[in-house]
Length: 69
Image (cartoon, rainbow, N blue to C red; front, side):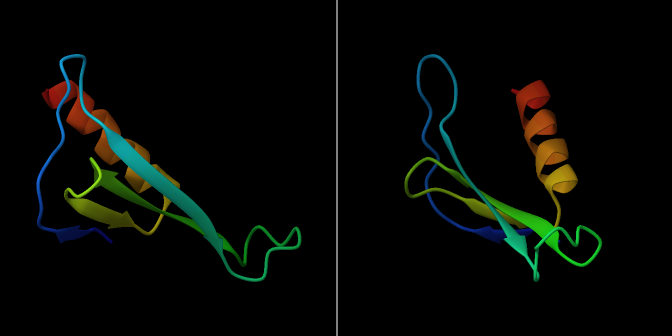
């Protein structure tokens, strides 16, 4: 699941700036099959935010962005 919010994108001479937030949803406590990881990425401080239902989706998105630029 991916969501977008409009905004500006921050670009530096060396590359792009991303803010990554990762959290675990569920009871935890060693019960890996019950809890799941989620992530959001924001481009720059006020830029586009994307939400992902899994870390795999997040990493796949970042990899595609880096290859594209």
